Amino acid sequence: MIVRIMGEGQWQLADSHLVELNRLDDELLAEMESGDEDGFHRTLGALLDAVRRLGEPLPDDALEPSELILPSPDASLEDVREMLSDDGLIPG
Image (cartoon, rainbow, N blue to C red; front, side):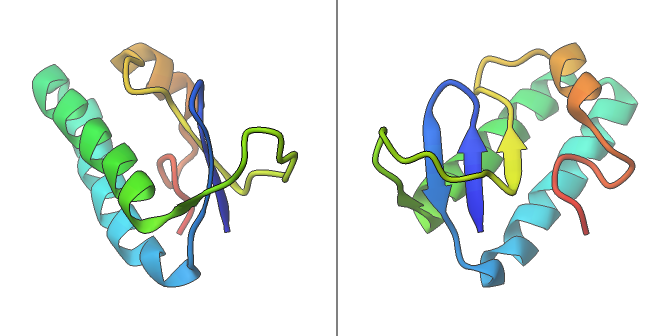
């Protein structure tokens, strides 16, 4: 799967990593719903770090379609709220 972090680039991740990403996505959603801005930023950072750690970066000139698009590290709670589906940022 190809994951894009807005403003940074794309990473190729194995589908097996979805479990960890979904766990972090669930935490992020709960923090957003409760208005926990500090927790939101901490968990967003952990989610993006997991993508960077688990994935293989694609070259900057690669034009692969992204299956997941995640916000930039400096995204606000409101910015991310606009990106959400019923499942959070990561479907499933």
